[in-house]
Image (cartoon, rainbow, N blue to C red; front, side, top):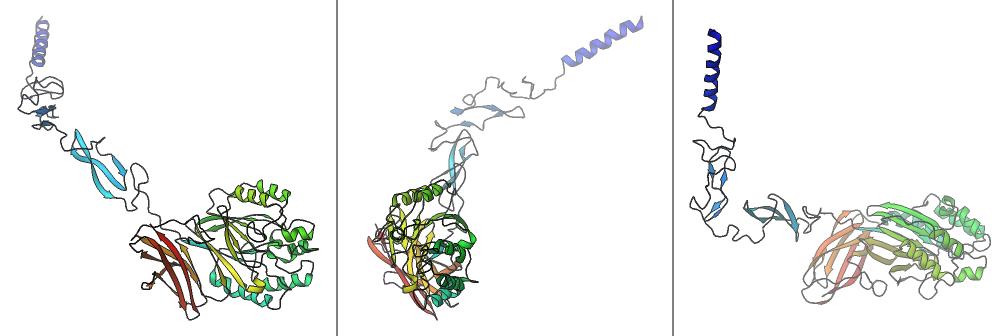
Length: 470
């Protein structure tokens, strides 16, 4: 009986204690003293009721009224012309990286942080990565050796292979036909093989056949006695080279493909060969595309039969440079947008062509086998090939980089550059054979001469080009 009375009494005391507990719980949505708010319950208070003009009153985590977003200005975004969001995001515009941080939280602005080092944006939130110019890569081009025609061609060829080419250090050396004067004469081929043995090998030394090479049994002799024939027993094909500028694709062709000698003399590029080359897919993303042939496609003695087929192959591969010979004099011209570089008869003139590409721009120049050898590669020569479609004008007073290939037989070689008749300025060499310096162009519009001079105990050599200022 006593237990029945005690239990209800204790239960009643417990219930009474829970219902009447005076301690507030912040965050339960009920405002209890000393709380002035709880969650969204502000007890009817606003920024205006507290004496502010505008804004949004908030409740803090401690259940007290928070006026941080209450303002006495009529427009809280006044003075902020470029509101942004979300807070802390970034953007890249006009070469400047900005962050959404400046201004009040409800109306932030883009704050300019810093210019991109490259002056350009990669995307909406980052600067473009600065990539240093790779600079030029270059090739040596020789044609019409004509072994058997003269008494000095053997010695001159040996000097070219043994001394000149190692000093110039090209990516590759290309010989565009007529290695011998009569392809049916094994004695001429044996003399040619004696000259290059131990000094040249394919593909760093790459040849195509000329009309003199294929006379009689010359086609078989070319395969047996030439470095390229021993390496690849076909008279056409496609090769690639790894360079600092990327892959270089080289297309070899045979423009003396007829069984009739007169047709080969005039140039004959057959349909079967063209179809086979058209069936080969170009290398994706090649930095440079070169085509080798014996006969030129433009000039005084152009390819007589199959020129349209040749141009179709050029277009298929996107050839930027067409190297050839045959005419026995040097010539630089354009076949559309392809630079045609025709080498002279080495056996007679003892000269070669140097061809380069520098950040997409093309250069070419004829040289004797005596150095030093100097060629401006950037900016491009507006007069290259008569009217260079790659040439662009520069702004008056602008500062531009000048780069050149400069090599020789002496270690004391130095290169200098000057603008018009100004003082000579020393160039630096970031890697072997490459020289560079920044120059400032005149403030007046017109044409301006840029000259690079190479000097050593071997001698001196200059290359001058004209650039347009507009």
